[in-house]
Image (tube, rainbow, N blue to C red; front, top):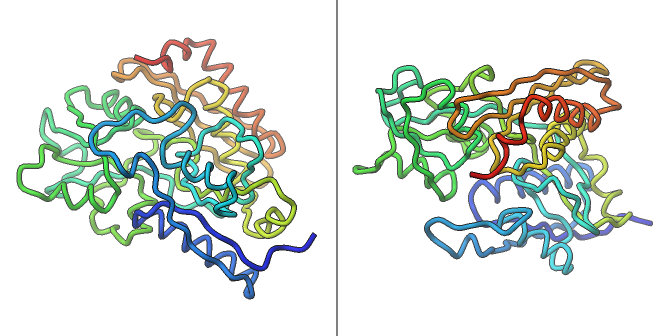
Length: 307
């Protein structure tokens, strides 16, 4: 079956999502120069609501809207931040390509360009991530936290506004780099302090499980990135936890070996289970499963359970 001559690429309308979709389009056109592409902005319930919202089971509003559009045939390709994509299989859909990964670290953006060590006692951090909150509290129990919403660019701008209650934000380095906001970074948090979310820094190019689409996307797949994120996401999935659980992991590939670091924490940071395992790259998912089994033996089930 021949590859299609045109492709509708689904994306959210935020600056970061549009950058990611345009990046995917550029990668495709480099391989398929005669391919006609169209960016289709998909709005979700999350885009239409303000304040605290509860995402649907199995995934956030934003990823669900894109996967629904794929199933309904409104788009041919959905571009996601992989860390936001549920680990559960999506019937009829697949990850056609995972391109080379970007930066994996979390970073601190503070109003006065202070590092974490220089933030005052009781400083207020803006983040809605239990993973980030738990790891920061494990390191500094004095910190306070406020959940923040909105796209990355807006969050950074609001931090500088008078009256903002936050002293700093914690964000993914990859998002700031993609938006050209590197100058706003006060500190790149060391991995010993802050392991990333599974899949952080990677993009997922999701499509229907059709030969023509898979053929089109195959040249964009970066094997070491896929092997690493397979292990990370397998660890998360095998713990029976989702993106709202205080779970962190990072895999690195050296030759044909894959090393995986994983953490499971109490939400208030009082306890942390930390593990490191290594396997052949051929056994990427098995590596994540093995690490999850070890973590569960150490009591991880009670830590990933909801509040």
